[in-house]
Image (cartoon, rainbow, N blue to C red):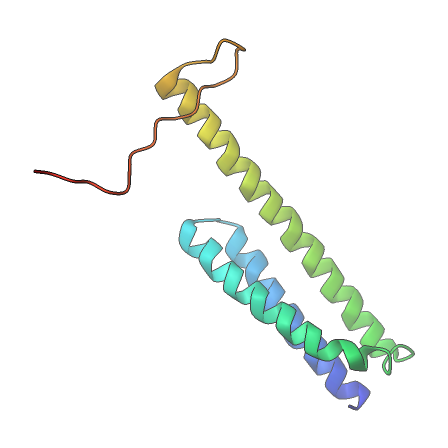
Amino acid sequence: MPAAEIVEGLQAVRTQVDRVCNLLISPSPTALDSCSQLLETAGSRLAQLQPQLRQAAGNPAAKEEARRLRTAVVCAKRLLENASRFHVNWGRLLGALSAGYTERGEPAPAPRQGRICLQG
């Protein structure tokens, strides 16, 4: 595979990771579902490129695109970690507000409604 095709492949992967970053700015459940699909596709594309990456190791354009991809992945990682922290902390706050605190002084888990409702 020519180096230009490898660069194009890396650009395509980076574009998907950039989309993930844009979605994670407002991490709604729908956005998170879309992110998982985009990241899975990006990972598959990158895995397909991996055998050819050694051929492009000396190519400056490929190195630059790989650096950009790494930067985008680090950004997505941070945004995912922040989204996770937000939801975990929100769950703790919800637990404290609705169920009080445990004997250890930690927020109690929020009562969860069952997903199955049976009426007779």
